Length: 242
Image (cartoon, rainbow, N blue to C red; front, side):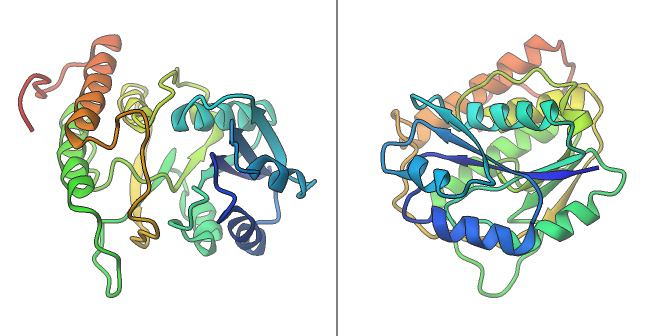
């Protein structure tokens, strides 16, 4: 059966050609790109790679929706495995073959930038690291998983497992919705160490999300909503300050 790579794209013209070329060094199979309403020429760049399966969105719907659309295409095409990788040069395409190989009997093999400390790794922005620690602790309390990095976008999924999920969060909190549903549907999950790379420390979240307080409140709200949606019983207290 065939394995695919999914990349969400929004205004990535500066890095997109190099990332696509690097992915092609290590993955010759299907490549699904979701152009999420780019206005910087990213769509034209994707069009210059005729072998890429491109989903064009006329307007920006959000990072989470781009992944959801990529998952839907992988399900439609009946691929066996799907890897998600961002195109901002913060994930290492050379790891793609190992990710496919190492998923084994798992449903999800999730990259973690904090599972192992390695020499030469970049230091994350302090506010991002603090939020990651707090939200990952909340996710673990809800799900029973033992994650160290709930936000890493570099993951390998069994497409059959993705069919069970009902993901509909279009924004950056979609991975949190994913973790709650993964636990509800009893998906087998493990982390694998990946390099910690921060190429652009000035990268913006947009929509007021650059404010750490607002961003954390948004994340917590999505978690609380999902816990209620699936009637999950856990020791997590959504109103506590973290």
